[in-house]
Image 1 (cartoon, helix red, strand yellow):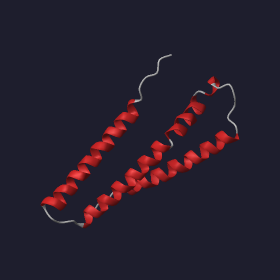
Image 2: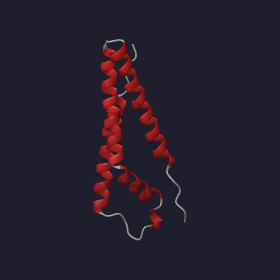
Image 3: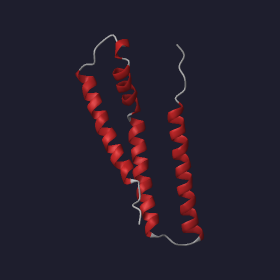
Length: 112
């Protein structure tokens, strides 16, 4: 059985890096060239911080995500049933997902 690379993680990381580069370019233009920092830049900084925190939370708990997906969709391949430690792992991952979704929701700047 061959393992294929996970291109979803790679594409998410590349898009996130592109996002950070564009935010840094905007701050360079606004601060170094235009010599001003407005309220929308503060909202962008807050959104970038929330998105970075959400990404860090998801990458830290990615092993749990893959484990839960394997138990959910391929449970017949396991030689044991999920035990209490697996249930605790599931619930702690759900708490992490909820926190990262809240942080991701906070990244969207309200429209005027």
